[in-house]
Length: 94
Ligand code: SF4
Ligand code: SF4
Picture 1: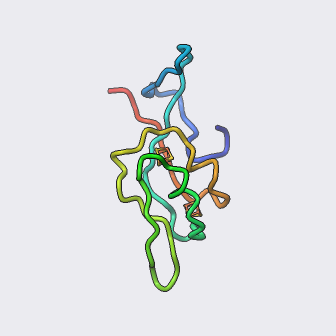
Picture 2: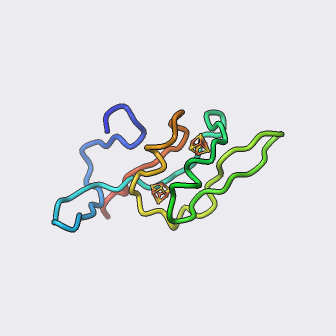
């Protein structure tokens, strides 16, 4: 994913596997950049894991990560966020 926060270096990262056995690298949520977030709520809608919640901050709505541990790293939220406000990272292999 060139040019996005999920870009990886040459380190070894945890990889998932599709049903047919293809490898892929999940990118897990770190945080939402509250300056970029427009409060559209799309991430709340698409995340099936309940990771986000819309909250009021200084009179405007923003998305807040309330359940980071539930993230499976599928990237659905990233796809729907126009300002690319969330920062996601792959997990390094131990
Ligand atoms: S999709 Fe992006 S802009 Fe919309 S609420 Fe979520 S983080 Fe904010
Ligand atoms: S990567 Fe998937 S599970 Fe994680 S926060 Fe985004 S939509 Fe939810």
